[in-house]
Image (cartoon, rainbow, N blue to C red; front, side):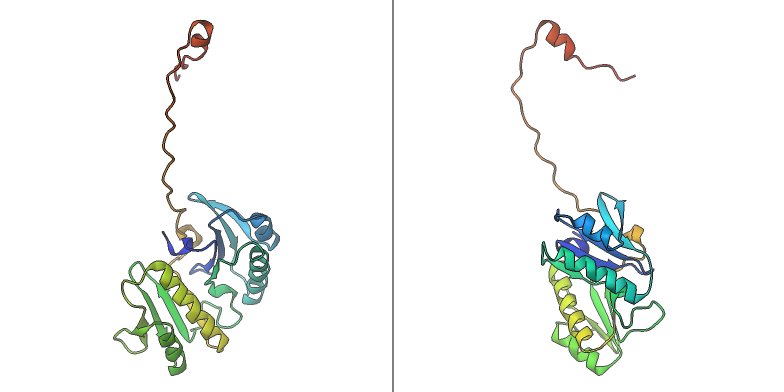
Length: 208
């Protein structure tokens, strides 16, 4: 599974500033709620993405907030790690106080201040060697890592510390595909004898 797949609703941002929503289960009126908040639906590798183009943090914050409020009437299993919807520090050019990065093998963070580093430490990040570099423990499950980042980001934001979360997704085209699902076992039917006209009707037509 990808990090986008562990909750009913995942809200994130691409590196180039798009905000996206993934629905991992059927939610009543989910598509209507999202398109009503001006997200655009797009089919992508077996799943439907809901996208907002790069815009001001205030606009993205309001639209994502409307969408999240509507979706949370149906599920509380929602993860929001979108840096584009945060009202402070939400520009690609401005360096945030904390940057948290997901890679294939680790979750790392940089902290510009001692206050930010102290908050990271409270949520399981430990020094990673280089100055101001931190990481979650190796071997932590992906779902647990996402939960730790959610808690850390919420704490930092509440303390007025700007945060940017890099999901390792550069553009909307890089959003992971839908998880593969095991196919259903074929249904075995008892053979049935056909005769006469019925048998003629059941003969397969040749492919031309």
